[in-house]
Image (cartoon, rainbow, N blue to C red; front, side, top):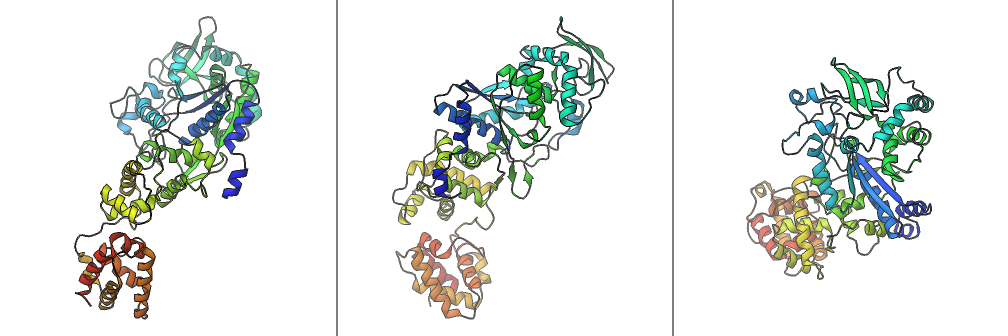
Length: 513
């Protein structure tokens, strides 16, 4: 989409917000996830999609609320690669909220992953009401829908068969009891229930049997839990992954169940595609294919992560590459000319602390390395190289991100350190390369700009017509950085200072020529 299209096309957030507001009903936007592992950038799409629509509704003066449900009453489904089998084998099937924390510093397994995620949401500017599923059940708030589900078991089974083609087992129940003995929900089955006492009778593979209360004694299975939650929370809008939006998927069955069993209405659906990590496919905590949101917030401002999601329509897959493309994303967001960026997505991405620098992030990374991130030298260099209106406060804010990106995600050919003395690698220069550096040094004068240096390099290279240009450029980098590649040579020499480079080239050549 070019800039003209962006200026004339209604943004997806505004399209959804207008359609929802047109109903005239107060909106309750909902989002959620099971905190079974590290909550990653891929998970961020759901909550930021929901938050963007919520903001769009508030902008219109439409009454709206926004909640985030942590599905911490879901069972641990298996021992994931990041867990110790000797410790966690026995907890498979137990609710996440009832399992010990992996590091011992949080109240439970689920809080170990949930607490840093909620901190990240705060940093991302997401203001949301947090609902924990275990408390939704234990408090009794889900009890009315548990009873309706148990009483509507046959109708639910018929809906599931009609929409999925699968017949439920004779002993299937919409409720999974929490065994009092082994603490699991995946090994017990319902044998009866009492509407009067609000209890479920069960038997478990471990040999235990008895009764548990509706309130906290287990939970509804996912396809029934979701529509029950819609009713209990009054949800009217919810984004969800493409896996739930397939024909006969969770949304299809939920829509029928809420209407025919719970006497409610399904929320406005916003299905979305996944965020795909370059070279590794769709992000998945269970497969260990993740980049945590908290880690990424150390590398780029929160507004940029919001922009990553909001600039794309939900049905489009987002490719995420934390290498050089991430720098390009920062620059797109930071582009005050608005030639490249989605201006509406920028508005919806504000998180409270962003200040444009006005300097391309990649340029900032190069300059920072060139002067070892000495802020005063960076300011001086940047102003000398065409950025006179540089915002010092914004630069102070952005430098830590640049450093952490270099440490974590920068390709090796982007990393460099200007050597204080002639690098040992310069000893590998052949006679032609040495003569080239000597001749180039004679053309360098104080005050030259990048384009002038670039021209000097090519004029000098013409004198060595029989030599590959790559070998000549390699000589420049070996003498300055001790490695065969580096930033654009003309601009880089101008950045370091032509006189400094002149002296270094003469030294590498063996003395003035």
